[in-house]
Every structure is written in structure tokens, then in C-alpha cells.
Image 1 (cartoon, rainbow, N blue to C red):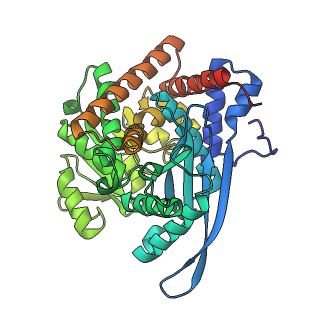
Image 2 (cartoon, rainbow, N blue to C red; image 1 turned 120 degrees about the horizontal axis):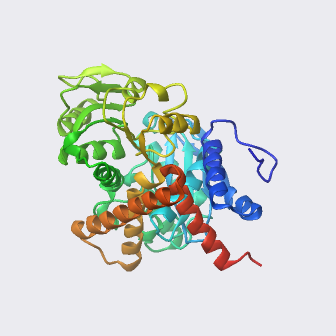
Image 3 (cartoon, rainbow, N blue to C red; image 1 turned 30 degrees about the horizontal axis):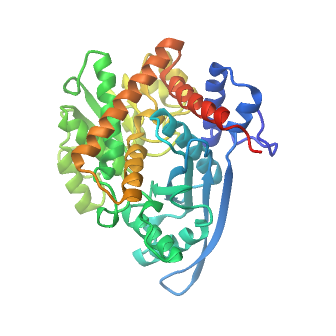
Length: 424
């Protein structure tokens, strides 16, 4: 891999290494000039902050957080904020880059960003999380604004987190600035349909993929890794469309039943007990076992690098719908492509969230809000059109769908860069 401008290369198989590998493959298909390739391989700006938080016991603990902007050519940067104990700069860089291509694939006027704090949010009280969030928002406010960079929820963060960030930013400005974040509660300018948007996008693209094969959800069984905002909604909507959900998992482990699981009942059990494991009428399996469980469709909706060259050959699903960002390494990708698995790539499959975030941003700027029906109709149209655009790109160029999605997104960013030119 070609070194970055500082002479370094990311650790092999890190998320950023994977993102750069994918970019280089797509750049080769596009025949990008070396200087354009260099420009798009690099992030625009990176901020690292170390900040103190007074804990409930009176002690002071220092946390490290990040905010990265990958590209601003097509518009303000957009991307979630992640609270997780394994967050690092290379992960944030990768997620910001993927967000740039994702926004371009669905043709919304955003560039990519990402943020994160190294913390296990489950170890903190609500008061500690609130203080951490407000201080982190203050630290990154130098690169955050509704016209320039708009955060959103991600792993470990919630609409409440966004409410705290919005309020903190608004206090600094002296007036309410609803459009500075998306994914916030409805009561303070959030959008209807935002909570379900990513999972709905996964369902829509999977439905369209099944149609291309002459099938429907009523013909398939599904396993979903990750039962958070994305995975739970994905499973519920697929079941509503007729799919049989045979396996689910969260951080505590997984459950399976080849005869099918009632997703709503599982969600209620999880709400009461704080975990999936133990759900009546199910067998306990591990997260690793879920990935290779007998199912027609596998939807990884957890973290990156879940399917690797170590387990890809054991995957039994013939379709993979990537609800998570970067759930598969390049080696696993090749193994599964060689097996004929139909892969719906992440930057297309899970783009429903950023699409409705765009809707929310527009509504907040205008102080004019749309109905559920309007939101879902607009989301449906964008996701269906984007799916078929990627399919057409793959067919025309005779390339894999993941490469086609990258090519489509990167080409739109390249054209915007060429039209704007290089300042000065």
C-alpha cells in the first residue's frame, strides 16, 4: 500500500487500511490520476482532544476524543459520534472516508466525517455521560456548525446524546441551533422516521436485491448480528415483510431458532432483561456462531471486521446485507465473491440513516417538518434509485457490487473536485 503524506501506512487489516485498499481498487477502475488519488486518500482535517470530566465520586478522569473531516467538496461534513472503548484515530478516519462515498452514492450534498470518544458508556452514570458529552461537544465546537459539520448518533450514543450536544452548542451561540446535529429527539427538532432509517434502508436494499433474483422476503431466512438501533429495526422490518428471522445477537451473545424468532417479543425481552440470551424457546449461540449460522441472508449490523479470512469460508448465507460499516475484510470479500455470495455493500446498504439525517438537517434549517409518510416515501425513492444505479455500474463495468458502489461515489466526488478546482 502506498504510504500517506506523513510517510506512514495504517496497520494491516485496521479499518483505515481496509478503507484505503477499497479506495485504491476503485481508483484503479476509474483510472484516477495519481494526484487526484492522493487528494482523496487523505482526510481534510483531524482533531484530537483530551478533556477532563468530574466523576460522581468527585475524582477527575481524562478522556480522549476525535473528530475527523474527510472531504468537504460536495457539502458540509456529516457523520456520527461513537462512544466505545476501542475507538481509535484509524477507525475514525476510515468511517469518515466511507461516509464521504456513502453520501455520494445516494447523491446527497454532504462530505464525510466521524467522531468518537474512548469510553465504555455503560460504565458511566447518566450524569457522567452528560458531563462528558457537553465537554466533548465544547472541545469539538471549533470544527462543528450547521453549515460545516453536523454530528449524529452512532455506536454508544443516542438521541439524548445529540440533545446534549445541540444544547451545549446553542448555549455557546446564545440561541437555539437545531440543525447542528441530527438524530435528536422529535421534541427538539428531530425528524420522524430517523430512528428506523438505517434499518429501513437495509430492508429496502435487501428487498430490491431479492427482486433481482426473482425472490421475496417470504422465501428466505435471516440472521442479524447486532440488536441495537440498526439490527433490531432491520430484523423487525424484514419480519414484517415476511422473512423468517432465525438468529439474532447482541454484545451478550446470540439466540437462534430454525423455526423462527418473534422479533417484537425478543425486543420486549431484551428491554426487560438487558440482553437477548435466555429468550424462551431459543438456543444460545455466540456472535461468531451467528455469522456462520444456516440462513439465506446474513445482515451484520455490529462493528467492523466481523467477517474475515478466518471465517468467511464457513458463512452459509448466499446474501449479505451490510448494516454495519466495514463488517468485512478485503480477504473475506474475495472469498465470498468467489463463492457467489450476493453482497450488498455497506455504503449503499446502510445509507438510509444518513439520508434521513439529511432530511432532518433540511427540516431543521427551514423549521418546517414532514410527515412519516413523506419521509419514508423520499427514503424509498432514494434507496431504490441508488441500489439500481450501483447494479447498473457493476453490470456496465463488469465489476463486483462493492467496487461499483465505491466507483460511483468516488467518481461523483472527483467530478465535484474538478469543477471547483484546487484553491488557490
